[in-house]
Amino acid sequence: MVGEERVMSYVARCRCGCGGLIFATVDRPEYAAITAEEVAGVIRAGYTVERMSSEEVRRAPWGCQRGES
Image (cartoon, rainbow, N blue to C red; front, side, top):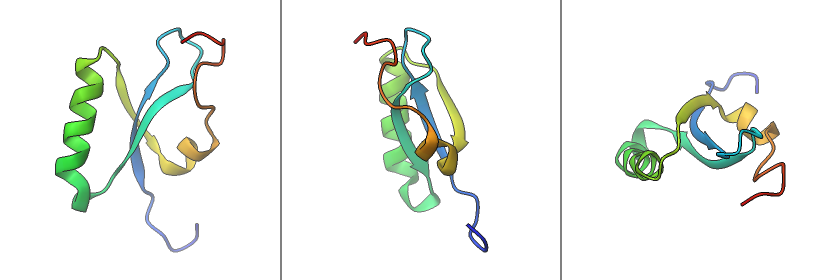
């Protein structure tokens, strides 16, 4: 959006490799403690966490795209 800062998110993708998102949280300073806790939990669960813009998150497919759990 014009005039708005580019908001980033942390995401984790499905383990099967399909690319579907299974987790996302917005990276905002006012939520830093909550974000850190949530991201740490996802990492402990064995997922790789990456950053992408929140705009990309809104366009990304959610859930397993192969129908696996």
